[in-house]
Amino acid sequence: MIPTSAPNLSELARLRELARHSHTVITQHQDPGGAYPAAPTFSAYRGYAWLRDGSFTAEGISRYGDVASAGRFHDWVDGVLRRRRAQVDDLRAALARGETPSPEAMLPTRFTFDGQNGSDPWWDFQTDGYGMWLWSVITHAARHGLDLARWQAGIDVAVDYLIAFWDRPCYDWWEEHVEQRHVSTLGAIYGGLVAVAPHTSTPVLEVAGRIRTLVETEGVHDGHLAKWLGSSAVDGSLPSCVVPFGLVAPGSQLAGGTLAAVAQELDVDGGVHRFTADVFYGGGQWILLSALLGWNLAAAGDTVGAWRHLRWIADQADENGDLPEQVGHRLLHPDSREEWVARWGTVASPLLWSHGMYLILADELGITDKDA
Image (cartoon, rainbow, N blue to C red; front, side, top):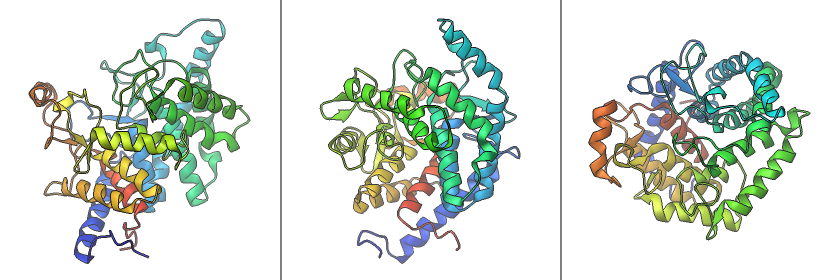
């Protein structure tokens, strides 16, 4: 049954066409080795793939029914992690000796398409992507009835790495504040560990329980999740702790408080900002965060709210149907925009993560029309 907030036939055709174009953008730019480029033409991202971006992009592609493309991405990550088995073993051995490995010694957040570390400086120590990939690969395999043995070696590396370093401060989704323990990062790790629990003998649920206790004790402010432990700020990534990662139970008071706080502070006309102090390109509204909030609303039964975000996203596509990283209609700090344009050029477009998140929300609302 189509909800009353659903689009008419003409609008539905437009939304389905954007889903088809999103699939095309993602698969045409996918590297032959399986990596999903973050943004194929953007100066600072060109030539690199992130586990964070790619895990959500692969989820969108998997939902769209392209088992082969998502599988090639997971093959690529598996290979990346297999080659770092010895590095993770060395890091764990150092930790067992009471040493604290430097951020530079940790696994990176982004890789070249051939699976190597980048050669240029970056804010590299981020653990969220490893949890996200566990969630993504296991969800993909379950959806399509695939044998996880295909990716087991990489899964084992990711599990060992997260079990050892889950509680260490690192950069967040936005590659900022390496000194903090970020709630969205902890949520991603939690989601990955819970997803992998039936497929490993490692006591991952023990660590997942510790993450939940830590966040409930130090990561909640005024009835909502906080940007990092001990903070009162809100972040647009926090809904991920509800759906898909389940750190906070959907429908709970804390879930409702978190979604409400994000909507109140960061949602303007359906477009969601990252956080109120954001100065990156002036602090615009992010496609992927609008889809994330819409995904959560759809899962909570608020289809009117979810359609609102899907329509807003579709309205941001350019004449070719490409979706950018962010749009500048309502900048939080407009005076800072030109600094970033001068440094890196115009905003990244297309951003594959934006297209992947559109596919997720479109599928959640049942309008992807995969067979059309």
